[in-house]
Image 1 (tube, rainbow, N blue to C red):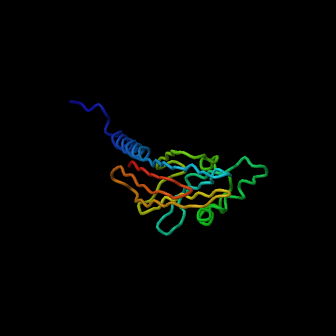
Image 2: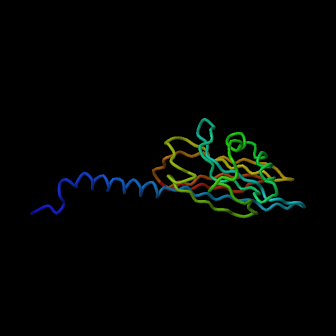
Amino acid sequence: MKNPIPRSLLPALLLAATQCVSVQSASAAELTLAVEIPRQNVAEYHKPYVAIWIENNSTRAVTNLAVWYDAEMRNNEGEKWLKDMRQWWRRSGRTLQMPVDGVTGATKGSGQHHLQFHFGSAPLHELAGGDYTLRIEAAREVGGREVVDIPFSWPQTQPATFTASGSTELGAVAVSIKP
């Protein structure tokens, strides 16, 4: 029986098949995040500024996933309050030129907020194998400041969910990783 594929094309076809598998694997891996901003029963309420980023085990910021702030204020005055998210500001914020495309967004009110990121795509990009901490910091005018940390390892061999909870400015936080 005659082979329908010429032998000279076999290496190229094998390489193309390998790339398709790795592209599919990279695009299938995702990180889903659920962040609760609790309802505050106070006389003067302002939506919190929130920063979400990933640090490596040397407490160095690897990537910023989201920064919610008031970008609509006159003369960019909303950027002035970004410093109130002190942990994020020291690790990453002070080096950024705001707004950051695909990262920054408007402040969010109380409730459950969901974000989804794909490994290999901005802003998550590729993560080298290792231990990381997903950090969420919230700061509110006439309110408090709180940081919630969720450690995780990458890569994951099976789907995994990690949870933590704040006590004042942040509620339940869940990170789900699908390899």
